[in-house]
Figure 1 (tube, rainbow, N blue to C red):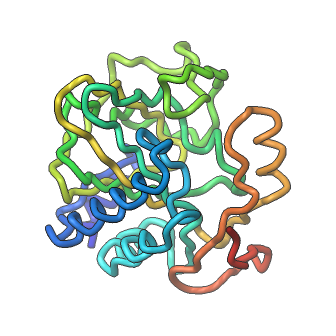
Figure 2 (cartoon, rainbow, N blue to C red; figure 1 turned 180 degrees about the vertical axis):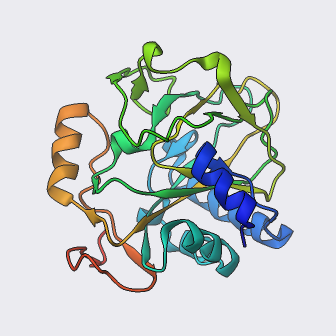
Length: 253
């Protein structure tokens, strides 16, 4: 569980690294699942935006009770997993992720998500660890982004330089098996990996079910921004119920 101090840090800074580490066997299982994914879909060598569309084995890692306990502390008793991605960033030619806010891409209203980021390898400055702008989530607003369709980036929406000061960035250095939690409005990104060491990271995206996953909005965002169409995401209820009464939990492929 997050301590009161850590929970306050999440509220103030927009992220926290808990006193928790996945068992070695779980990390190895995630690596094996990722190896299987790449064997079948080598085009996702740098970034797979929705691993659950290809292999529901990844869902096992989203149901770890200790992780769900921490997410419940942040989001409350009713929440669902709406996506899981893999930012693989292989050695030597690992793509950068532009500075962005997650909420710029996501059709959830009111906008709310807690992302659990799992270090599948050691994440260092040399191999392109995450970088956060501490406290940038406090205004709870989406800043101005622009489209950058460079093939050397994992995502295509990037923050305008006028919206943040990169000199304030905090490097999220993690050992394999450590996790971080971060807020939907937190500004973050990561550099390319030119090192000889891979930097695999798996994300688990949890939303409170007091919010609604709006599939019509998902289609509009895809059309307007050229981002992935989230219309066919499957929501997996993790705990509690659906107070909104409007979320659709049908299984989709």
